[in-house]
Image (cartoon, rainbow, N blue to C red):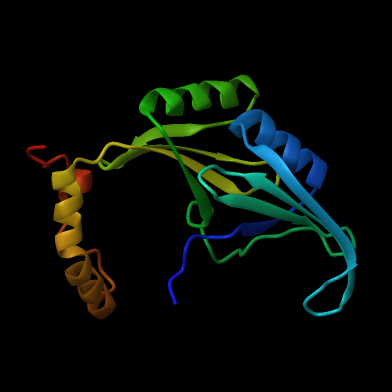
Length: 179
C-alpha cells in the first residue's frame, strides 16, 4: 500500500458558517463541500452535525465539524498552546508578509515572522482557538541534505536521552555556513 496524500484533516469548530467565512476571507480557501446528518454514518450514533470542507490547495482539504448537541469545545490542558497547530505552506516571503498584514488588518494578533532557518513562519489563532502557522520555505538543497543525513541519529539519541540532540544546532544558533 502507498498513501497518495491526506484526503482531509478534520477539526471541531464552534460555528461552521463563521469558520468557513473566516478561512475564505483570511486564508483565501475555497468552500468546497458541506455534509450534514442527524446520525453518524460510521457509528450510527444519533448526533447531528455539520461537516464543512475547504480547499487548502494542491489537493489538500481542511474540514471542520460543528457539533451543536455536545458540550463546548475545550483543549488538552496538558499540552502547551504552541504545540498543536496546523502549518500551511505559502509560496514566498512576500505572500507570508501579505497574509500577516491582511490578518492584522482584520484585528487578528499575529506572532512573527519567526526564522526557523529552513523556513519562516507566522502564527495566529482561528475563531475556534486552533493555532495556525503559515510557512515560507527558505531552505537550500545543502540544508535539506544536512538535515536528512542526521534525522535518524537525532531521533535515536532523543529516544534514549529525551534531550535535544545537537546534530542540527545550526538551525537555531546562527552558525550555518554556505548555501
